[in-house]
Length: 245
Image (cartoon, rainbow, N blue to C red; front, side, top):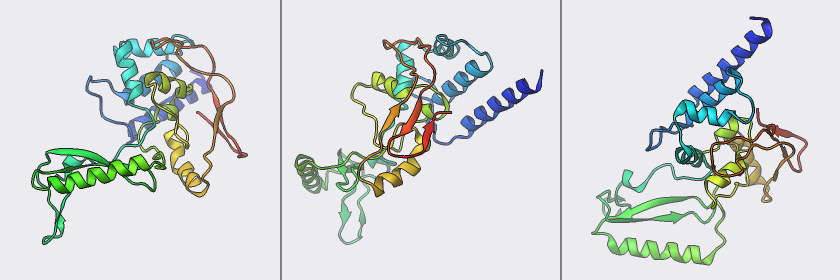
C-alpha cells in the first residue's frame, strides 16, 4: 500500500465517521430501511469497492437488500422539508385553563394544523371534548388564514442529508420520489441551510441554484444509475461556488 492509497482510506474512514456521528439522521423507517447506513454503504461502494459508474446504486441496494419500492421510500424520507419539532400529542389539549393559566393537557379527540403567518411554520394542535368549542373556533380561524393566502413557504428543517455526503444530483431524484415536492429557496443541502436561512431572512429574493455540469438521475423510478459525473452547484448572484463534496 502506497501513500496515496493510505490517504484515500483515511479520507473515507473520516467521511464514514462523520456520517455515523451526524445527529440529523433519522432512525430506521417503518420497513427497517436506514438512511444513515445507505450513505455509509454508498461511500464504501464508491471509495473502497470502487464500483464503476452505472453500478453503484444497484450495488448499494443489493448490499442493503433494498427493492425498488423501499429504495424510493428511503429517498422520500430525505426530502428537504419543514416539520414541527413536536406533535400535539406530546402535550395533550392546548386550550388554556383561565384560573390555572396553563394548558389543559388532557387527551385530545381531534387535531389540526395551525400556521404561523409570518414564516409559514406550522404545528399540530389538539383539543379534548371539554374544549370542543375553543377548538372549533381555532380551526375556523386557521381556515380563514389559509383562504386569505399570502402565507410563505416555511424553510426546511428536515432531510437534505444525501447531498451532504454523496456527489449526485439529488434534486431530480427527490422530485421523482415525490411529484409534489419542490426545492426550497435555500437549496436542498442541509449543510447550507444555517447560512442561507440568514441570507433568506435578510434578502426577500431567494437564491437560485443551477446545475452547471453533470447529473445523476434515474430515467425511470428504478434502482439504476446514470454515468454522468457529479454536479457543481453555483449560487447565482454570488462570487462563491457551492460544490457537493
